[in-house]
Image 1 (cartoon, rainbow, N blue to C red):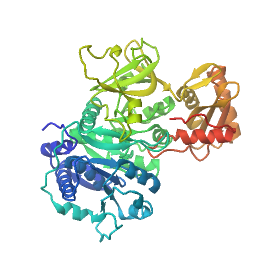
Image 2: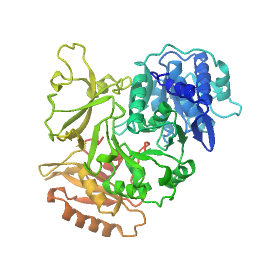
Image 3: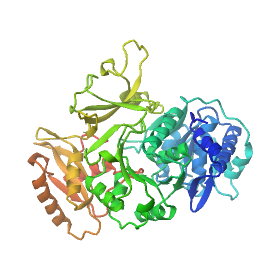
Image 4: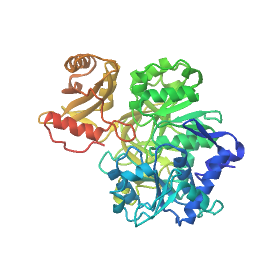
Length: 543
């Protein structure tokens, strides 16, 4: 059975291998037949409770079976699920509930207690479904409260609404780097095509064991589910407190594939790894930002048998490119080529295609391009635009417009078609008449081996336009005083950087750089803090 809708991924694998393990969490397993049956049961429960077509079901839980079941049951019922990062605070949760217009909320009794003061601000909410087996008490006068087992028992055989591949399946909220989070709408087609594409180039297979360490509200985190389910592989759900917990899970579960963001990889690379992990880890993949070369080299030393994949993508279009392992040494710094099922263009401001090595905006077209931002036509129009005819990707006789995602990222394409990230348009540092990429500065600092994490910014400057400021953390185990570390880094910068690129300010964060809910460095917050330290006012938000 081929999968065309999101929930078909589970159903197809259940037909092929019903006894194969689909999920593990806390040492407990759920096979594909059990998972498919639970999805059908909750689907029926949602429909019997009155879930209308395209209604939103928000899920505020950690990684557990009920979380995954609700996602796929909602899609099967014809609704749209809204994953809410478990790290968010009640005020942020209430914003997502209001913005998405969620009529259902699935959460735990413990989490519900923290929402008592904000649920009254969510008038669209009609039903609460609480996990656990304890007796459920009414939570508020404006909505009904149900237990998980009650929802399971409501109507296992009830059919959902009619669903086709272009229908909305989910709303994934970004981390809110430029203000309040905004919801990216993804269709069944987007998510299934993404799963099939990633599973193809990662060469996933039924005997794979994928560790879901990233939040499931993050597109790359949710992708661990869909990629595994597309081939009938196993997913281990992990709620970790420390990076060492990730290594322990990899060892105990004999994980074959791990995808993570750069901050986590930087932390993991500084730890001592159990010797046995390299015997079963088949690949490791990076997403959500640039992995420093020094971190990549360290991981390759620790994991000589594992194949590294470097990926680039946008929540608005899931994934764009990947660099195959065999190209890493030949093309250092490249973000690779398009993933299967997508086309990436590098365009000038007039919409025409750039020449080789000419910087331009990365524009993505194809089945992975999402449906826009939820209930926000203005922001949607800024990012999702008709593909210009002069881009050369479409025949002149096609009269219906094709919508592509204009990323806002500046890249260049070499003569062989490999892409290189230059920077975000609004992050490029303009100093002394030069345009400087923060990524280039960060890469040089990482290469010194003196820092754990670092982030470079341009701060307002009276004469330079912008002065370069960098926030760094010491490498694990470092006992060097902050002022000594700064002197050492500046010495290295003078050796490896032109004068205009040398930071005017280096600030050491002993306790670690701030991260957002998806585990990435919280650049807007860090930018504001650096401005405060420097005594300058931020001119624009950094995305």
